[in-house]
Image (cartoon, rainbow, N blue to C red; front, side, top):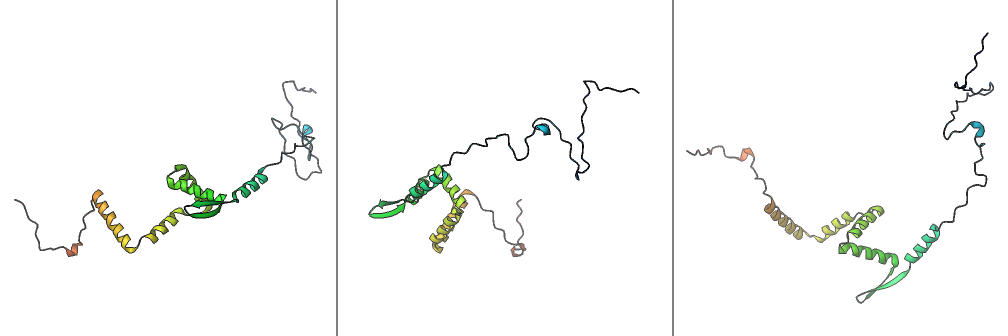
Length: 177
């Protein structure tokens, strides 16, 4: 009987021995990058850092939030002409923000529309309602007449044709000769 010895070039893979008592068969574990052999893995429930993670530095967010809320809630008195108004700093800041928008600041416009969308404010609906309230029936008629005249200056309207049943059938077309 001849015995064959494996050479050094041939690699033998040892198959894991399954216990006969186990109910579910174990899947084959492949060793590779990021997958060390099972005997060198950390036991379950333990990490590789025995001292544990370093504690995080306390965050300033809650303190900053409280300081900002208190600062914006302070009351100030503004004088507009002969009138004096008492506002919170937050309300005064919003008023200033809207004034920048009214002056034509494009950044303020962009931010105002973004803020209105975030809080669910329909700016176009408010503007439409204000215009509808401002225009009476007479103003509306004058506006429509003006728009019609301006439209006629820019583009010609297509001719209005009468229905065929209203056309005269007894008129013959003239022939040029």
